[in-house]
Amino acid sequence: MQTKVFQLLVDNTSGVLSRISGLFSRRGYNIESITAGITADPKITRITIAASGDDDILEQIEKQVRKLVDVCDIHELKPEESVYRELAMIKVLAKDEERQGIISITNIFRGNIIDVGPESLMIEITGNTGKVDAFLRLLDNYTIVELARTGIAGLGRGLDNVIEIREDGSVYHPFRKENVTHH
Image 1 (cartoon, rainbow, N blue to C red):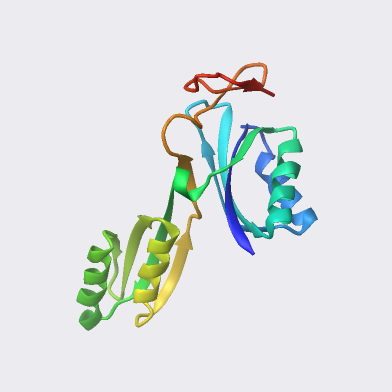
Image 2: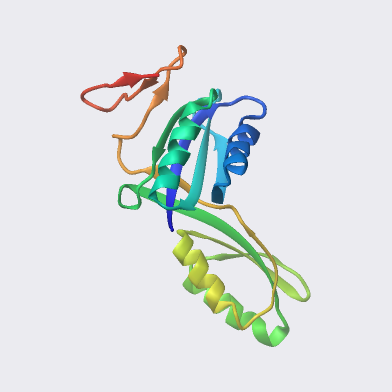
């Protein structure tokens, strides 16, 4: 089993996320994380999906998603060619004598204390999944009351993978010398 991160550019239409996640559900594919948000073009939504499986399953995922009518483009965000980030918000039970230890760990990981309550601290941390996981392991000695993780958001490095979706639905690579256009 391995995990791949796919970036989709889809039409920003009602129900598009439901149709994509429904495909995964129907086929029995596992989604590790999924994030979605509008792009610089308000007609297009960027969806980042981390999915796990063997090579055949991951290849099938890409082929099946590509066939969906709302999908303008899908490609793998390879780790060596991309930057991934995740946001986690963690609410930790924090007695007076524990606060400084929690704050010190948070500072080491360049996290932020975003809320302080009489008996708790809320921490915000961003980074790659490994950083978030390492931070959470260091909090094992404390009581995590609530945890919210966004999942991976990612972009390819440089300009080679930048694409635009034209009015006719074709995909255009504005920064590639060969300027490939496809539907």
